[in-house]
Every structure is written in structure tokens, then in C-alpha cells.
Image (cartoon, rainbow, N blue to C red; front, side, top):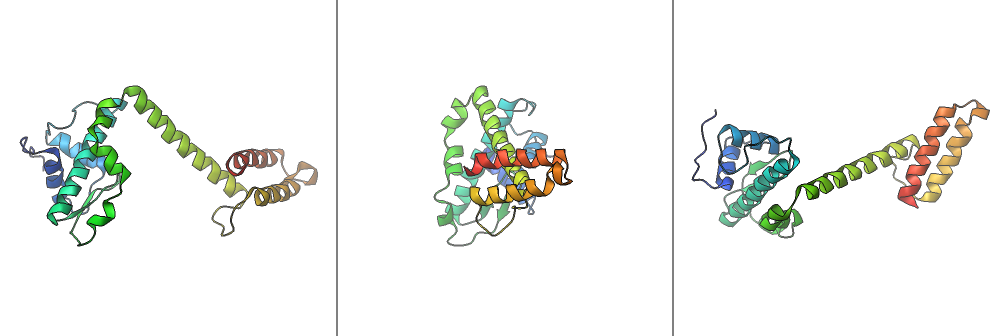
Length: 198
């Protein structure tokens, strides 16, 4: 179904209409594609490959979603679960409005200065920061897995990590029949973990 959305409707109302038609919820990407397919005039109709266009489109959609959530709570007519992977309209349950009072994401997206003042360089920095954090956490997890310390119940400390490092070096040292490449991986993992646990 690709009928046009009423251009007189606010973006929050257009999103509400789309979410009512999809009780299982929609991802942010699906919402943006549906808005474009239905010729919404409230979002840029430009390629999302441009990072600033992507940021502005994302910001406008999330601003509207948080406004819609506030409106639904005020009217006690529904709730809105908001995440980039799934935005879903849910039945209203009394007492739930108080749970979203302290929401820094809501505050960020409802402040239109954040949309107006964010430059292409800011978006580049945000993306770089995100990828650095992602890479860092994956790097740390990989090192913990190599050491056999991921998912354990014991609290991790540098002393425990060093003890495990010594065991692995002893076990995999080429002089004891181990491989040089395995020893190099163990040394690299130790370097990574020292950055996190020193």
C-alpha cells in the first residue's frame, strides 16, 4: 500500500499512522522508506549516503517519535517503544509515563538546536567516536575470549589477566611445542587487555 500521507499532518501524526498499520513494529529504516514512498514533505528526499542528510533525517524522525510518545502518554492512549531497530506502538498501561521522565535521548532529540547546530564535521566526529567505541569493545571481547576469560563469573583484574597470560605463554611457547603465531596473538591480546585493566 503506497498511498500518500496527508501533508497537513505533522510528522509525528504521519509516523503514528504508519505504526498503527504495523502492530509488530518497524525499524527506523523501514519508517524512513515508508515516509519517502508516501511522499512525506517532512523529511529530506535526498540520498541517505550523505552523512549530514542521514543525520538530519534520523534526527527529524526521532524528534517526531519522542513528541508522539509524549502525546500518547499525556492522552493515556498508548505507549511507544523507541529504538532504531524497532519502533512499536503498544497499548497504554497506567503508571508507565513516570518511567520515561529522565531520558537523555529524549532531551537531545527534542532540542532542535542539536539539529540546527550539528555540522558535517560534528557528524563525522560522532561516527568516528561510535566506531572507535565499537572497535574497542570488540577488540577487548576478542582478547578476553582468547584468554578464556569471557563470560566468567569471577571479577576481572589485571592480576588475574597476568596470571592467565603467564599460563598461556608457558603452554604455547615454541620451545614447548607451541606456535610462534599463537604466542604473538597471546602477546597482542595482553597489550589490548592492559589498556583496559591498567
